[in-house]
Image (cartoon, rainbow, N blue to C red; front, side, top):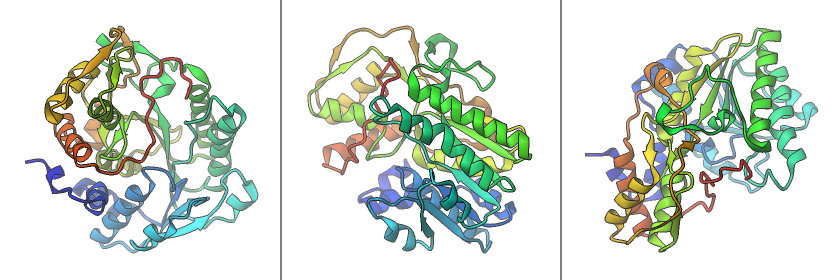
Length: 343
């Protein structure tokens, strides 16, 4: 029986999202020093910080876990409740970043995706300039930095997804700026000898957001599902959190690049048909699948950082149950169906 059946409330969900694997506990046992998470105010920040805190405690390691964000909408109390320190900081302010607490370990989460087509200068500043500021400040630390599978561009579905050694072919300024982020991180990693891992993440999903949530909401609301982007990857967010923390075992200079997503290539049509049966709702489609999609092959990462704990089928059941019961939605659609690169 899936562990997701334990979820009745958002508190249950947050507990499960932050539950460390034995592998994470071992990584945090070996890891020396404090941990700073930059840009912790986003969707994954709280659960990732909590997992680091819980794994450190389970390993019997005394360390500070510090979340850094502007916290423009508040939210610090949720971190403090779990013994996670917080620091308010605009990460585009180099002087403010220079005053951040020292730490031997850094997770760089800050980034801008939605609204990027409306404010491209801010997109480039956040995704390409900010990482340089962070890498300079923490040049003597270990860094695990988030990127995205969008840097690969659209690839043939039959190929099983892009691999880490494939040449990037970013589509649109968001993906281009993310490649810029990687290049800046790689430059500073080589310049300063900073041990670094770059995580190319494709669509973490929990019950309040993610590709499966987007599709389930459309089915539940009777909306037509466009098949233009007919295939996708996804991964249970707790598994993405665990793989991110375990990536500290694989930091290197020059930086290592690791795809993080689920092992399957999922069909939008088949997924919606399954969700429709779970929700007892008819499904309406428009258009036809194309032979390319935004896909990553995560086999090397799953061997070294995984395996995943939750399958897509288990996640579909949990998402359908959550949606049918009126569970909260974060209102942050993935826009995974966008083929133009504009978000």
